[in-house]
Each structure stands twice: as C-alpha cells, then as structure tokens.
Image: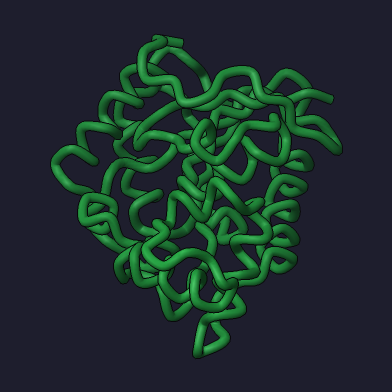
Length: 220
C-alpha cells in the first residue's frame, strides 16, 4: 500500500516572527501566516483529498481550515494530537537564545553558540534529549516519547486510508525537519521547512519516502 501524503507546515505565527521556541504554545497566525495558508490552499486547490488531518494545536487547525476553503474535497478535518510539534517544556515560548545557552552550558559547548548552530552539530534526537535534560521542570519531551507518538500517528493514517489515496496533513516545522533528516538524510539546515510549504511523502505500511520538500511554487 502507498499513500500520497501531502504535509504542509502551518502559516507563520507571532512566536515564529519573534524567533522564539514554539512547541505546544498556541499563538495566532500573523497576516503573513494567513497569507501562507491561503497560498498553500491555492496550490493544492485542484487535488481531491480522501482524508484531511492536522495537529490539534490552534495554528495547524487554523491553517487547515484556510486551505480547505480553496478545496472541493468533501473530507472533514480530523485533528490528531500525535502530530503536535515537539514539546519543549520550560523553554516553550521563550527566546531560542535562552534554550541554546542552557544546552551549551550543560554540554560544554562554546559560549554564544546559536540554536541553529547547535542543530547543525547534533542529530534531532540528541537535540531533543538535550532540551529534555536541561529543562528544570522535567516537562520537555524526550526523543523516545516524541518518536513513539509520531509513529502512532502515521500508523493511524495508514489504517484509515487505501492504496493510492491523497491525504492532507497540517503539521509543524521541527516535526517536518526531523522527518527530513530521519528518512531523507537531509541536514538540519536543508530540512528547515518554510511556513505554508508543501511536502509530498509516500507513506507505506512501514516507511516514508520523500518526493518533494519545501515547495512554495508548484500548483498541484
């Protein structure tokens, strides 16, 4: 079985705009974020989706509903918590620099190293565990916990769809970056998806294969 899985990153939020860590914290879409979603909807307008899913976080749901205003598919939006962004615990909603400083101190990295520079030197799972380890509340999600729920989400989609189906999923930036690094051997910088970008994956019973990544131009 092979499913055509179109994964779109949600539109820009105010937390994105201010370059802060955004996991489970809800923030409204900016005007640009609304336009990101509108443009994604227009690019996908000619596709008929058998099922439509999103993370249950507000920015993903809002993006999905905007996209669907441009689409004639009759499938109703289903929200799946399994596709939430990584949960960053104590660091959720604060500056990337604060998280980077805490990780640098714990892992004895150079002072002043940026979050993006840390991402380039660590695997996504090592980075997730590093955030988990330095979270003073212990709430940040470990790599194992995140991966288990994410794979459960893909199992749910595989069970609810048939061979050749077109499926739309609205998800999140770090989640998409992890998929790109894990299944397509992209680097951290290569796998950073833009808000509203379309990513096409082939989902089988036990694998994801990347077909198109970070597309902002194609009308499907």
